Image (tube, rainbow, N blue to C red; front, top):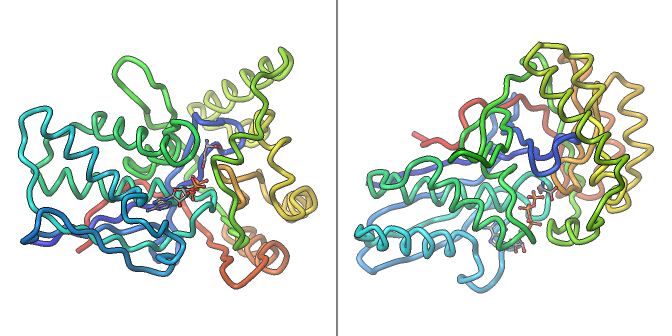
Length: 315
Ligand SMILES: Nc1ncnc2c1ncn2[C@@H]1O[C@H](COP(=O)(O)OP(=O)(O)OP(=O)(O)O)[C@@H](O)[C@H]1O
Ligand SMILES: N[C@@H](CCO)C(=O)O
């Protein structure tokens, strides 16, 4: 029987945790911001079809679609442990813009691997599946990083620990926060946005980064909202990437003056995130960003909350 798996969009880095922090997000209006992969029995060994709003932005060659690569990797690993790959058809609903800073490739990877695993009665554990997700993400984005795939798969706010057999662990977060996500409609390639970062950083930057991230994590655990938002600073990526985003400094400043607790680049951009302490402020920020940050008709703004569930089967 056909199975439909949805994997939500994510906001990685959260300014203070480059490659180490990511949150799954869901619009509060109930719309689905993420990709869906349907899996079903098939007469031939394997078929892949892609549909959806952003299907035209996918690579033309089927083999370059990360969902195809997910199938190949899953099959190789299953065979290695003596399992048999079923005949199956995958249908990708490509709802997420590519190069958005909302974890578009991660949505496709997560939905595909969860669908494949469930279709085969879950031969792989969560961490085994997540390791495969990171491997695939590394192929398309210029470096293995789990801060999109982990929250999209598991939900919540995730800290990448990458130690003792665990790739990530969930962090407590501020339930009152509204995450206003504004995608301007232009593309920023993650691989390129990673390539422009320095190879090394000064001691002062490293010390500051350690203090900011350590304090942010401490503030999450001790429920100190003011300390948490004060520590959401980015010395690793934002100073080098802000030129890729239209009028970033001005937009950031305006959002702050309208009550945003924190503003920054979502993932590698061009989406910007702004955290609002309440719904009224979120609405104000949403209108401001809609009127001032969107560059064309593909752009959108969503008021979101952290998605606690992550990848899931749709009814
Ligand atoms: N199913 C897919 N979904 C998204 N990108 C795909 C897919 N299959 C292949 N790709 C390729 O992977 C690359 C993804 O680019 P990139 O990592 O910049 O996008 P992104 O995942 O939206 O970024 P971000 O993680 O910042 O949100 C592109 O080159 C794209 O053509
Ligand atoms: N941590 C990654 C996220 C990409 O969405 C980066 O900033 O390159």
